[in-house]
Amino acid sequence: MTGFSGTIHNVAIASVAIGISAMIVSFMILGGFKTKINEKIFSFGGHLQVTKFSFNSSFEEEPISKNNQLQEVAPQIPFIDKVQAYANKPGLIKANEEVMGVVIKGVDESFDFARFDENMVSGRMLQYIEDDEETRELVISTNISNLLHIDVEDEILMYFIQDPVRIRKLKIVGIYETGMEDFDEKIVLGDLKMVQNLNNWPDTLVGGFEIFLKDFNDMDYAYEYLDENVLEPNLFIEKITDVFLEIFDWLHLLDKNVYLLIFFTLLVACINMTSILLILIMERTQMIGMLKALGCPNPQIRKIFIYNGMNLTFKGLLWGNIIGISIGAIQYFTRLVSLDPENYYMSYVPIQWDWDIILGLNILTFIIVSAALIVPAIIISNINPIRSIQFD
Image (cartoon, rainbow, N blue to C red; front, side):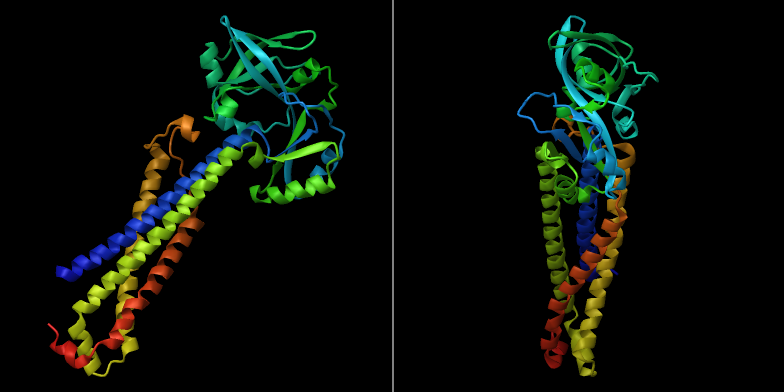
């Protein structure tokens, strides 16, 4: 198609293509941010954390017995994936004449090392000794490694301020990086048994439990169910979304921004298609008059223009999907667009492939834009066949 009509058709296709590609890329990026940040947070802790009620504001927890109702009934609760024990212990790392305060998170074999493995930069995770001896190994962050000028295979001294002061000579076996300050600036991973020995606890006592759910969306229900039906009165349960409130509020704000983008994109697409169909009707006024003079009813003429608009919308969706998916694929495989980890918790723009959302965006756009075409098509009923034939 050439001339004025061809230009109008191309404009219509381009407006829909730009809109759908922008929505597809936005949802890919939003999904990527959610997935990556959730992976980083849940690699350190579960969806729910159970500790003992305490007025102590330090990093250390009051001990909890492993022989409690939660441990007994957890395997029978359908929404629970796993429960892992932990205990925190603040200390000072001394290396190369430098001293730094950190919190050692003691974990045992139940810790989800496979989930944490994606954060590893170099080295390996902890290896546990078969007998009852504690493992004298540490996994530290890149921040701590850079500040103290230590690396994998280096040995450090760690001081625990208590009465009496305890000292451990530990070997650095791995270095991790999440890009999240709450973890990278202060958390190191060590053996839970070592923390128990430092606190003079038997192996039946731990600092708390982390509960992983099979579905993140079950968190509110799981929180209420466990609090009311499972946990003892002296235990306190907390949602991970409350622990890292600022991060999840930021993700919620991203959700709102994307939904606003969808609204305004669809609004612009509808206005563009409505305007273009009006132009096409004006350009084809004489043809409409001829069809009416030959006895063609208004509904049938309207269908011609609506189907033409729907055809343009379909072509725009096709090109928009090609553009949007191509942009997502380029970023997914090359990580071309980078980010500042201090502000975005990661060094590149993440991409999440969710074909259900992409299909839903296409269906939603096609239905709304097609429905908007009915408004200008109504004008056809008001066109007088005698005047329109004489229209120039």
